[in-house]
Image 1 (cartoon, helix red, strand yellow):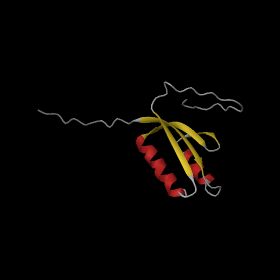
Image 2 (cartoon, rainbow, N blue to C red):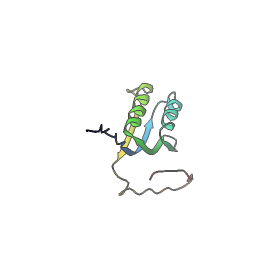
Image 3 (spheres, rainbow, N blue to C red):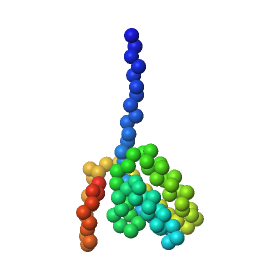
Image 4 (tube, one colour):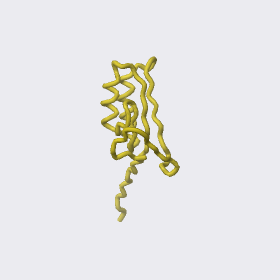
Length: 99
């Protein structure tokens, strides 16, 4: 008797840093979108752990709300946190940062 074997979808969690420079008319909208997925660490900087599927959703939401001729969003996908060191100076808030 052959048993049905279900393949498990292994969710790939990525460490990302997202920064944006958008027109002031769109800043609040982009910030609200990013807050749904990542942790805000500065005015236009977010970081956190995110699955591949959620990252795709995030990118689609952002893309729908920016003007590609004038706005810019950069997403840095970090392969490993092993070689990354984070230092903060100044007003440091205690958050669940991933770095």
